[in-house]
Image (cartoon, rainbow, N blue to C red; front, top):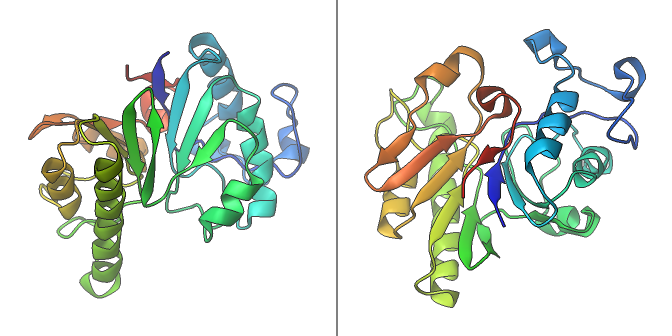
Amino acid sequence: MTIFALSDPHLSFNKAVNLYNVDPSKDIDKPMDIFGWDKHYDQIRDHWLDVVKEEDTVLIPGDISWAMKIEKAIHDFKWINQLPGRKIMSPGNHCYYAHSKKKIRDALPPNMEWIDADYTIVEGRIIAGTRGWNLPGDRFYKEEDDRKIYERQIGRLRIALQEATKKHPGSEKWVMLHYPPITKRATESGFMDVMKEFGVTLCVYGHLHGKAIYDAIQGNVDGVELKLVACDAIGFRPLHLE
C-alpha cells in the first residue's frame, strides 16, 4: 500500500458527473481556467489513475470544493470517490460547508473520511488533521482578527495528537494542515511547537498557489518533514509519500 497527498483541488461541480466528458459550460460553477488551471480536473483524473491503486491512500488537506453547503459539495466528493484508493480529507479556508463533522461524515460516499481536530489510522500510522491558520508575523496576519482562531487551531491539533498518542502509543505520527505551519516571514509557530512536542515526522499542507509556491518552506525542519501538496505545486499529480 502506498500513501499519496494532493490538496486544493478546488472543484465546483453543480451536479453528479462522471470522470469523463465534463462540460465546463454546464457542469461547473467556478471554472479554474481563469487561474491557468486548464481543465485541471482532467489533469487530476489522469495523473491519479496513473499512480494510485485501489489499495492506496490519498491525503487531501483542504479546499476540496468551492461549495457553500454540503448538498453541493457532495457532487465534488462523489467525483473524487470515482477515483481509486482510500481518501482522507481535512478542511481548508474555502471549505465553507465544513460546519459539522457529523453532517459531512454522514454525507460522504464509502471509502472517504473527514478528519478535523481528530485523526485516523493508515497502516498503523496516525494521521491527524486540522485546518491551521494565518501565522503571527506573516503577510496576511492581523492580530485583532486572527489571534483567537490561530490559538484555537493550535489547540485543535493538540487535542488530535493527544488522543491519538493515548490510544496508539508508539505509532508514527503524520499531520495534515491546510495552511503552512511556517513561512519565510513566520519562521516559528505553535503548530510546529505542537508537532515537535508529539514527535510528528511528516506534515503535508496546501493553500499556497502561484508565486507563493516558490516561497514555501519544505524539507526537514527540526525533525518534521514539510511537504507542500497544493495540486498546482505538484503538477496536479498525487505526491508519493510512502
